[in-house]
Every structure is written in structure tokens, then in C-alpha cells.
Amino acid sequence: MIVSSIQSFCPESREWQQQWAVFSKAERFPALVCSALQLGLLFARWVLSTALEERAAGPQSWPACEQCGHQLRSKGYRPRQLTTLIGVVR
Image: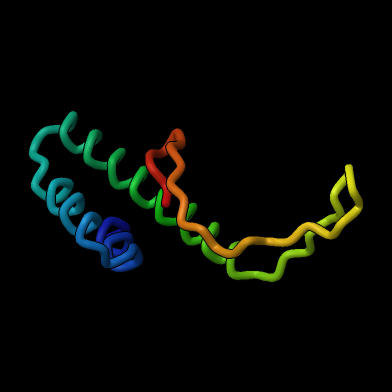
């Protein structure tokens, strides 16, 4: 069944396991819909934060400053937290 294959595909985080347990125990349709939506949002946050980590790890070419002409450079990786439509992404 597709539901069991999704569970094995998704990340093994504690938050995911807790939300999956809520989904599995849902008895009524509205509860099932709400927990499925939460799983989808959790998965979307995981995909987005993974993509951002990959981009941050890759090489960057920085342009020259428009005002003075000096080459811009990175000050290094800084952890950030963004609030998006899918929730808080770190």
C-alpha cells in the first residue's frame, strides 16, 4: 500500500514519527485529513531545509559591489530561521 511506502521513505525524525502515530491512530475522516495535512507540511519543511543546506554547501560566485567595485564575499555560514507558508524552516 502507498501509505506504508511513504512512511518508510520519509525522514526518521522524532517529530515525523510522532505525527505519523497521530495519523495512524486517527479514527474519523476529519482527524485523518488534519493529520495528513500536518505530515505534508512536515515533509515540505524537510525538503526545503535539505535543499537550502545543499545550496549553502555549494560554491558561490559573488559579484562586485555596485558602488565601490570591490569583490563581495561571504562572511560564512550563519544559521537562520525563516517563517514561511509551510511553517518555520531552519
